[in-house]
Structures are given as C-alpha cells and as structure tokens.
Length: 147
Image (cartoon, rainbow, N blue to C red; front, side, top):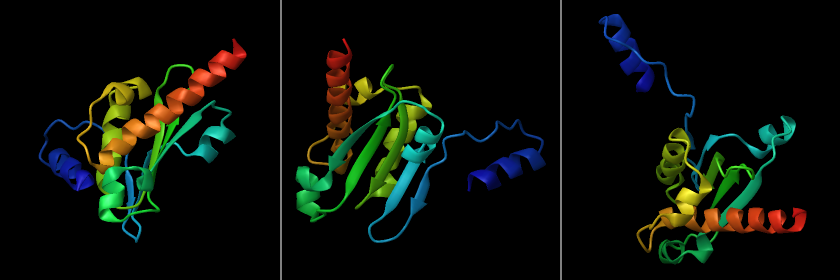
C-alpha cells in the first residue's frame, strides 16, 4: 500500500518523502510472526552490543485469557543508551503489537519509555513493559558487575 501511495504522489507531481527504514515484517502463520529492526544475528555480525528482554505470553494475564502459552515478545536493546534495536514477536496478535515497538524505535525512544509507560491491563501490549523490565534489569546487573 505504501509503495502505491508514494508512486501515486510521484505520478501526480506531489511532494514525496522516502519510505522510512523501519519496515515491519508480518508472517501470517499460526502462530503469527512479526518483527521490525535488527536481528540478533545482524547485531552479532556487526559487533554491536545488545541485551535481550523477553516477555512470554503465558506469564501475561491476557496470554492466559486467550490461551496462548507459547507466544513471546523479544526486545533487543542497546546497553549504553537503552535504544530499541529490534522487536520480535510470535504468537497471537504479533502483527498488530509489533507496531508499538516500530513507533518507539521510529521516534528514537528507549527501553525506559516502555518501563515508565502504563499499558492497559490485561493486554498483549503489556508484554512490552515486561520485556523492557527484563532488559533493564539485565543491563543494570551488568553495570553493577562492571562497576
């Protein structure tokens, strides 16, 4: 759709901005799979430090309500400044909730934003807060060890 909109604008002589670099990928399987940003493999190959924060649907009230015991959300976070580097989701609604991470990443947001945000309860979107807390706790523990 976005490529068509940009082509139509260009054809009609309207101002056109380039497509944003953060394009979500959605795979409509059972379970759904969706991601945006970098993968662990890409970050490892480029020697980019990162920490992983995970939220499992089975640990969320909404995950239990919808009966999704296998779904999860994973955040890849830069340990130095908390920027989100990637968001990976599989399970119920993955292609819907990935856009929260896309928006935070597109605005230069950090894991702290997700930690401090109030999410509706019970929702699958709450997985962002759980995963952000997981990543933040890991980063804080590494900082304590390194001094």
